[in-house]
Amino acid sequence: EVQLLESGGGLVQPGGSLRLSCVASGFTFSSYVMSWVRQAPGKGLEWVSSIHTGGVNTYYADSVKGRFTISRDNSKNTLYLQMNSLRAEDTAEYYCAKTGDNVVLYYMDVWGKGTTVTVSS
Amino acid sequence: EIVMTQSPDSLAVSLGERATINCKSSQSVLYSSSNKNFLGWYQQKAGQPPKLLIYWASTRESGVPERFSGSGSGTDFTLTISSLQAEDVAVYYCQQYYTTPLTFGGGTKVEIK
Image (cartoon, rainbow over all chains, first blue to last red; front, top):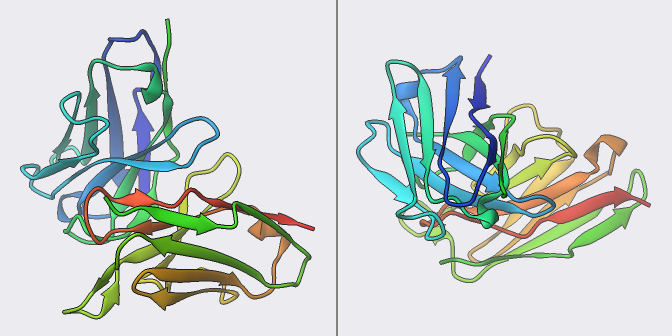
């Protein structure tokens, strides 16, 4: 069964840092683009970042560019999101999502259950 | 950035009746060389992650009931639930994957009348 399991969320003060992880199973992780999508409380979905299979090519929403870093370890089937300089507006549920191919411009066919990030003093 | 606009924000439909959700993109998401619309639909039930329903604007994901269908091309798209079931209560989102930033519509909440 294809699964994505996020972890690493929590409560952090404004200006702080957090690293999210997403462990994949049930598919060849290294063959697919992976993404992070977030959802603020009571709001809609917002794409955050995507990373190509080899980990070199990365893409970010303007709202997180320069503060967040996406990476992956294909040997561990794990996707990461390093979040620095966190702001209150980064408070959200963060979902890890698998893209249906090895290109960024593709639909997201598998989603994890999410991990909650709360930025507050 | 391609802006995705959904309508209505919410709708209440009787069980067994048709539900129609519209999605409009600020520019075409039809890739001419492949003749594919880079448009997907997702369903999100309360407390759950999104689930892919439709991709390439009209292709149903494996396991998705036939009552869900997608149509449209270019900038105007529709998700139709032909006969609403109780388990279809959810928020539905359209998303374009034609270009980055990938963008979603604001969502349409579907309830039972």
